[in-house]
Every structure is written in structure tokens, then in C-alpha cells.
Length: 380
Image 1: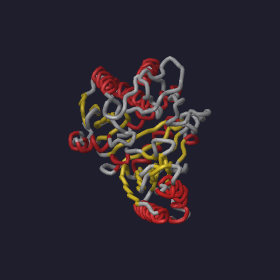
Image 2: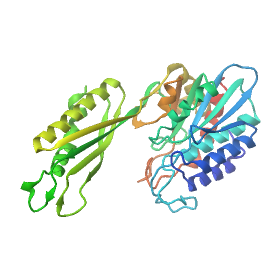
Image 3: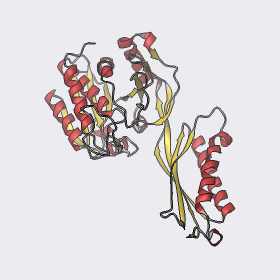
Image 4: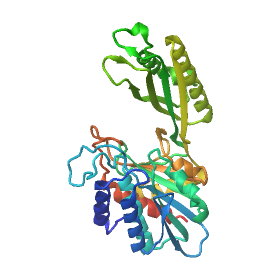
């Protein structure tokens, strides 16, 4: 589908990329979204779930209502690109493509407002705080589904590594759930020259970090997909002091509650075992973040048909593997049926994957994403 105003959409996307805002501080970004929706003649609601924006567009007399969602927030990551639209805010960047997702949904909103080729209600959801900060729950708790009735909800994410012009549309498991863990080992601190008078929490934590690599391989069925990753190791503040504390932090990725329970039990057991072996104490904390993203069948079929309609059947797959990354769109799916699809962003170049400091959204796929949203809206 030809998008006559695509140059405006590209400019808008690059402006948002240059001004990234983290979770619940997306004030400039939300203002742009609200301004554009109002300019298109769409009913606008601001400050939904703190900084979220909702647009409502009705056509015809149909009772069907669907929600289309994009994310507003950027990551706390220093950008290492040198193009003209690189981030002007030190320490923050759009490294996951939310700038592109915003632009695609605004592009579709404009087309649908100018060409109301559907019968029912489209709710455009611009969500804050997707990057592990609970933005979906904030909107839900602020009455998203009560204030804006929806029969189903839909999400889309650009996917580097999948070719431009291709889409993954999966029924069932598509993204993993996420849990955080924090393990603190405590003992006697002391002088590094007299380790016999102290407890070596660094050695204990190092051994534990290695042991945690056995959690999924030795506690779950070999066919069960799950990941345990240690992502932070904090200990010590001086080169000649043995610290009193060492803390490991990381994430668990899972698809079933049974797997999560088994992983938590194994981590707790290993932490307590390592602490006992080295004569220190262990404290283990888990923080549940998001459930798995599970697409429902009827809604995914709707997405599959929409994708095939714009790309052709040979460019749309429903057999790709789920991703172990996580997405709080899953919280929306806990309240309404729906589907979350992956749009090919092009073959990854070195260091330009999602969450990379050298990532940039591929503007070539903007018309594809816009066309997909339009085609999906036309199905109601």
C-alpha cells in the first residue's frame, strides 16, 4: 500500500529517536502523539497510566472494537551512532524501535481517520514504560479497558534478523515471561591480607554464579524452554578490603508457572547451599515482572490474514520459534484476547541488534507496518 505522507512519518520517527524519554517521563513524546491524533480529528485522552495516550476513532454503526498498541519509552542506554538524528539526551536512546512503532501507528491512525474503511471502533494505545517498568499494568489499573471498551488487542514489534517484507505470526507462545532475582551473600569483612579472619563472599558468589548455569539444564524437562541469566555482580569498594556483601542480580525467562516455580526453588537451594559451604548467609528475592505473551487463536488468524494480504502468503510464517525476550503486552492479553506479531526489520549488521547502542529502526519497513495496521483495522 502506498503511503503518500511517508516522508512526514520518517521525519517524525527520526525526531522521536533524537529525543528519547525513559519510562513515565515520555512527556514530549506523549505530547507529539496527542498533537498528531488531534490533528487527524481523532478523540484524544492523555495521562492514561501516567504518561500514556489513547486515541479513539469510530466509523459506521458496528459494535466491534479493537485496540492497537505502540510503546512510548526509550532505554537508559548511551547511543553510539553518529547520524544526524542520534539521541540528544545523554544516556538515553531508542534502542528497541519504539520510535518506529509510534510512527507506524500514527501513520495508520492518519490513514484510517482520512479513509474510515472499517465498521466499529479503533482504539490507539500509546503505552508508557514497556521496558520492564509496568506501563501496561499502569494503563490497566487506570481503567484502560473500562474507559475504552475493546473486544481484542494487537501489538507489533520490529524484528532485526527477519528479512524486510516478512512477518512472524504465531499462535500460542510468542514471548517469554520474566522474573527478576536478587541474591545477597553476607559475611564478615576484613583485610585482604588476612582472609582467614574474614568470610570471602566474592568467592562464594562467584561459585554460585557458575552453579546457576545448571538450573534449567538440571531441573526442567529438556524440551522446556527457559533461561536463567546473571546480569550483575556487585561486591567491594576497595582493592585491599574483603567486603561484607556480594550481590548477584539477573532474570528468569519462562513459559509456564510450573517452570518458574521449579527455577525459583532451584535458585534458592543453590544460594543456600553456596552460603553454607562458605560459612556466609544468603538472602534471595524474586520479583515477578510480566507473564508470557500467549497469542489467542482466532485473533492470530485475523493477523495472519491481514499480513498475507499485504505481503503474500509466502512472506508470512506461523512456524517460527517463540522468543525468550519478554514483553508487557502480555498483561493486556491477560484481560483481552489478542495477538502480537513480529515485523521483519532486515538482516542484523554487527552490533545493531535490539538493545544495542548502535541500533536504529529501519525506516524501510514503516510503510509495511502502517499497511498492516490498516489492513487489520479493515477486518472489523
